[in-house]
Image 1 (cartoon, rainbow, N blue to C red):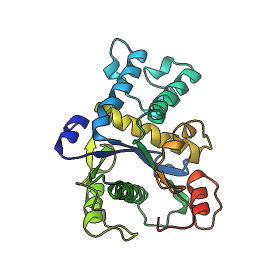
Image 2 (tube, rainbow, N blue to C red; image 1 turned 90 degrees about the horizontal axis):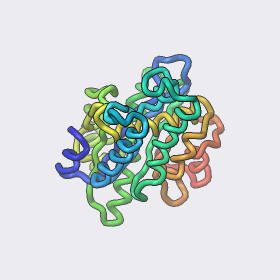
Image 3 (cartoon, rainbow, N blue to C red; image 1 turned 60 degrees about the vertical axis):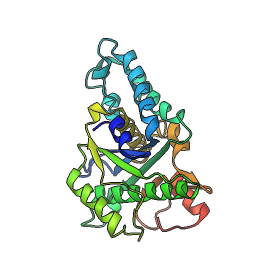
Image 4 (tube, rainbow, N blue to C red; image 1 turned 180 degrees about the vertical axis):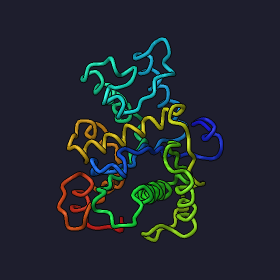
Length: 266
């Protein structure tokens, strides 16, 4: 199922998610789930922007170009293998800049989980997914209060754990999340698509990678491009969550906005 067919069903707000970092990799301190929310009528515009960028990279076969940020960054595979370091980094920035310069209604969401701070037995992927579903639903609540009564759908890369996340989403809608909110704004269980066929998932990949680089490596050059697009209201950044051990001081944008505006249930 592609973006166009999803839009024809009944939906208006689509949250595309992908992850960065590996939960079992001891060399990485963070796992990130992140992505971008777009109005369904805007999905085609986003796809065309990446198609145009792909045309500059492989004019003979632009459809074969998949924008996977970690592969671009490492330059180990074609077509990135022949690029200079600066050119490859420039591609990542160009993808993120499309989001930054896009429709005002587009929103970015991400959850960065410090793996060492998670209690034994807690599923890191499910924790991040629950967090973002809750934030997306709260965003839709605010839109509903403004007269936009459309619901939303979460769309993930097929490499993410399909069965367990679909089960969780059903529970969120019937039983609620750990924070007590029932996610009535989600129209259905998540859909899973092949990232090679979905330009929007490739955008989500870049968002997750930008956040991962910021928290795992202290590299803010990618994060800063999309930072203004995180969902925010009343001086508080709602779209970015940083989960770390309690009592650990942090001045990242997510933690700082919560310190300034005061504690909430998230």
